[in-house]
Amino acid sequence: MIRLHRSHFTILAVLYVLAMIYSSLILGPAGLHYVPISLGEAWDKFLSIRYMDNGSNQRADWMGNLLMAVPLSFLVNSAVHRGGRTPGFAGAMISLLIAAVVILAIKYAQLFFPPRTVTLNYITAQAIGAVLGVILFRWSKTSSLRGRLIRKAEAGEGLTVVLAVYTAFLFAFVLMPFDLVLSEGDLLSRALQVAQTLFSLPGEGRAPSMRVVLLIVDTLAAAPVGMFLAVRGRKRSTFRLLLRAFWLMVLMTLLQVFVMSADVYLASIAYRTLGAYLGIRFIARIHGKDLRKRHYYFSQYVPLAAVLYVLAVIYISELFSSEWIGFDEAMNILEPRQLLPFWNFYIVSKAQATASVVAHLAIFAPIGVMVWLRRGFWGRGATFSASLAFALSMLMEIGRWLKPDFRPDFSDPIIAAIGAAVAFKAMPYLWRMFEHEATMSGTLDSYIEQHYGTAAPAGPVVPDEAESSAPMA
Image 1 (cartoon, rainbow, N blue to C red):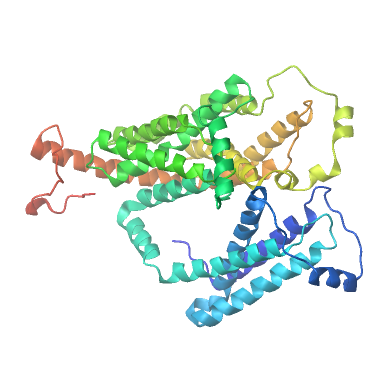
Image 2: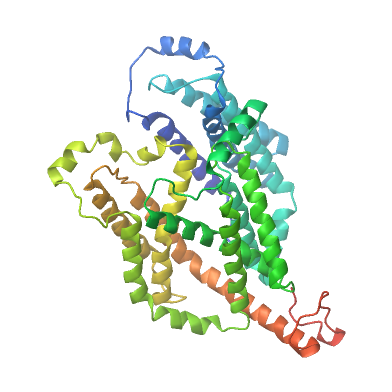
C-alpha cells in the first residue's frame, strides 16, 4: 500500500496553493488582466470590503469557494501533523492560520486583477471550508472507517471498497455543486424548475442521436452501483438486489430536487436502475469464470475495438459533418485567452466544469484499458497510453477549432492523458479484484448447489463446522 509522508503532503499543499493562485488571479473573463494600483490603495479597498446580499443564483459560486478551501487545510494539516508528533489542537490551529493567510493573501491580490469579486461572502465561505478541511483531517485520523476499509482490502474485499467509493462519488457528482434549497422562496423557485424538466429527457436542444448517447452514458454510469450491491449481497436474489438499486436511484433523484442547479428527470430512475441491473448481471456472469483466460480472449479484439472507439470519439466530438472553416479564419477567431490552461473551465459553472473533467477522463480512459489488455499484467505502458490519449484529444480539439460555432479547449488533452495513464495503472489491480470476486462467488455457488440444490436457500447460508474454512461473503 502506498503511504504518503510529511514531505509528500508538503509538496501537494504547495502545488494546491499554486493552483489556487492560478485559478484566482490568472484565469478570468478577460484572461490575465493586471491593473497596477498602489499597495496603500489596495489595502484601503481590502479593508472596506463588505458582505453582499446575493440571491440564490450565487449559491453555487459560494459553495465552490467553500469546497476549494477544504483540500487546502486538509493538506496543510497533513503536512503539519509530522507523523503524530505535533499535538492535534496545535496542528489544527497552525493549519487554520496558514490557510487563513493564504486565503486573505489571494483575496488581497485579486484587487489587482479586476473584475474579480472580493467580498466577505467568499472569504466566509473559504474560512468555513478551511475549518471543514481540518475537521476532515481529524476525522480521518480518529475514525475507524479508514482502518476497516484497509482491513477489507487486505482480506480480499478490495472490489467492495472500490465500488463503494464509486457509489459515493456518483451521488456527490449528481448533487454538484451542492447549492441546496435553503428558504421557502428557493423551494418555490425550485418547484417551478423541476416541473419544466421532470418529464423530459437529458440533452434538450441537442441532436436526437446525441441524446441517445447521453442516455446510454448515464445508464452505464450506474452499472458499478449494481456491482457494489451484488458483491455486498452475494447471497441475495437478483430481484432483491434490483429492488435495492431502484430505491437508491429514487433517493438520488429526490436529493437532486433540493439542489438548485440540478436537472431532475423522472425517467432517470428507470434508466439508472437499468444500469444497476446490468452491473448486477455482470457480477453474476463472472461467477466461477477464469478471468485470466478471458484477458487473453479480450486482447484479441483490441484492434477492432480501437477502430470503433476512435469513430465513437469523433462522433461524440461532433466532427462528422461537412461544415468547416479555413485555417486563416480559425486563426482570426482564436482568442489568446483561450490558450490559457483550463480557461474554458472558468467561464462555465462549477457543475459544468466538473462534468467536463469527469467526461474527458471517462472518454479517454479506454485507451489505457486497451493498451493494458495488449501488454498484459506486467507490461509498461502508462506513458504510451497518455501519449496516445493526448494526441487523439488534441486532434479532436483542432477539429473543433476548424468547425464554425465550436469552442476548442486545448486543456482537454492534458485531462485525456491523465485519464488514460491512470486507467492503465489501475487495470491490473481492478482485474485481480474481479478475479478474486469470480473465485469467491464460484466457491459460494458450489457450496449452495452441493448442500441445497440449484436454488439458494431463503435464509443466510451457514457452512458446516467441517467446512468452515470455505470462503464466505
